[in-house]
Image (tube, rainbow, N blue to C red; front, side):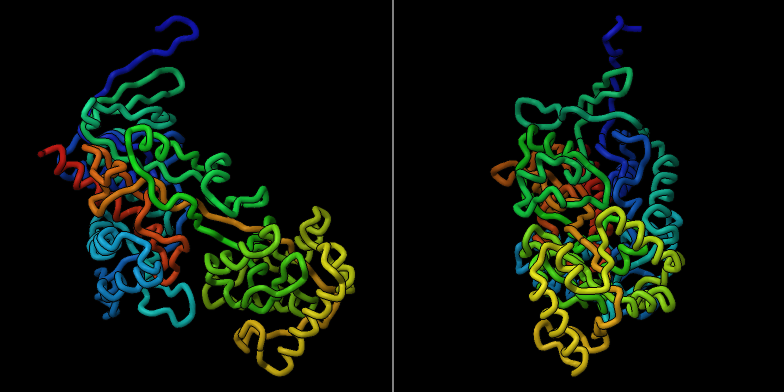
Length: 479
């Protein structure tokens, strides 16, 4: 035992060292171990899975499941669609490598025991369907990856944080220094794969990189602190895509029932001035709806509904039932609305004047907005924002409800600059020998707005980038 106040020290060695046991890190460990590399994963938390454990659908093109369904998910067409959506702001080699590899990766997962119970459409008329729903969703897939990693003899160090990446004078990777509760560990390794997620929990980095930051910005995902990003920069890594968030707005902070109805397409969304600002049918495309919210005062939005609409939610479920099944808890909606009204995040009033006063908007502006909207419902045409006719439902039955929403986000996208082999690059765009980076903490694969046309691409990129990095790491070790 060491002296009181000092930590024990342990020296370990491996061929591939992975920082983070999320979906991308576990996939990397399996790919490396299957090629015969001695592999260690260092995980800061006790649990595994990271953001992947919270994920739903997995993107894949030309997968075995899609081929069995005779689904025309042409990889080349999806590559072009991705690049077009990003206005060519992404790296075409990274995008093409990811999408072309994605189908084979689902076969790789099937061989481990992963089963997809459905190939889903995320929004109506989406085609081709490319979002694979694994049994148990992301958490179920993580269990399979963890089991396979253990079968291959990968060593997992839980509750252990990597502090520094060790480099040689020529910049090549030599290993890492990590810290557990009672000891410090030096792990010698020729190769390090950074799979530590983004920086969603680091207020300082969010304020520095995200131009629309406010104190109301609400994190829905895990609070990653940017450890991997900062270590990669210290090791000479360049950055790309900093300041991109996987936005989830407008977002209501409260019960799941109210979170659901806050973005229902038949509700009405207004800003602090009491003016509509986007077609509410955009509720399914939350990254683009969030872009519209970023243009509003304080990035605050209010969802309006009336008693008739509320009763419809209670009795019939959400209109978005084509995508999400009706919530069992909707019968509790009235109670939840009152509880949130007591907390100050919901206003219930028999008049629009009362709603406007609570919002801090001019009464006339809000009343004019509602009257104009109701007339649009009567004539079946929304001249202002071109909302679909089927979602036009007037607000005329008091009491009226207003739900205060903020900008939500699931995590950050971008950070460490990589190439299509998942090698971390330096400021001259040269690979840092032995350093790789994967998952959401990397840049170049997604633009400044997350592309829901390729539904499940964050989940898909995590698994595919991990697999690609693990394989390339072994090639690097073998010369």
